[in-house]
Image (tube, rainbow, N blue to C red; front, side, top):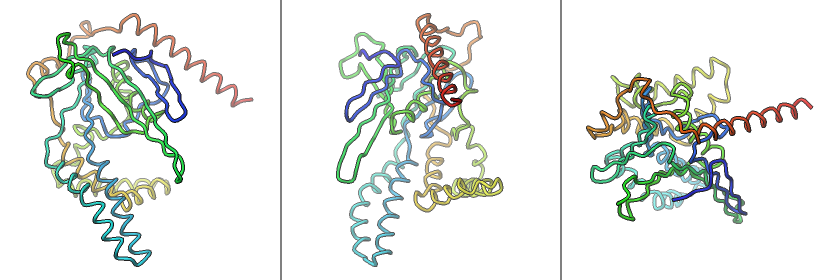
Length: 320
């Protein structure tokens, strides 16, 4: 499956596609794990998951609060009936999903420069890192309410088996992160890890290390304490705006409940249950690390020069 070269942007009236890989060159954005996709990271590999029960909880919580607010403001109990009618099926799906097994993550091995993609029936693919495709896509629509824009980061993988059936040749992960620069920042988590190292990733709530302090006590108590401590720290630092956002997130989005359920399902996150992959995930001596291809080296050098020129031009414009 061919895609335009990395760095290409295709714009239409109501859509935009930014092609990020292959080859995985810098986007110019800082890596940001906007969806808590990083489940496990170390010097050898990075596990990326697309399971986000927390996001679903916050969407449903905001809907419930909307109908409760309407019933209170307009003194209309019919709003509660309407809300229950609209929200009951999504809430049922959420509860049902809480009792399903968490899908396995995709594992990026930076020392071997390969990616392991778990598939159905115990199958998995090992794909060269430089063949992975990535696209930040945006779609817009216009209605009486105004313009609405939605976007995705789509990461694609090709089955390395040349004899694979047609319905088993391609696999893709989609992340509802809004497209554009947000999708690029999320992609940079994977690209920067593979090309630079784990030290450049942001401090995240990865569910193997970052949540360690919540274990040993109830998940609910631990999350609430951590959330309240975050508000307290912002107030002590006189960051009133950030503290207010945390309070708003708790009231209108149910952030503590979302964090609690996310921790409950992902602490610890699922591991890849393949003996061969356990061996594949072990550290290699530095002299055995796989190097970048000459094509990628050239593409990265060219892109870094372009970004440096853009930064210099922006600096000069700012001084003028």
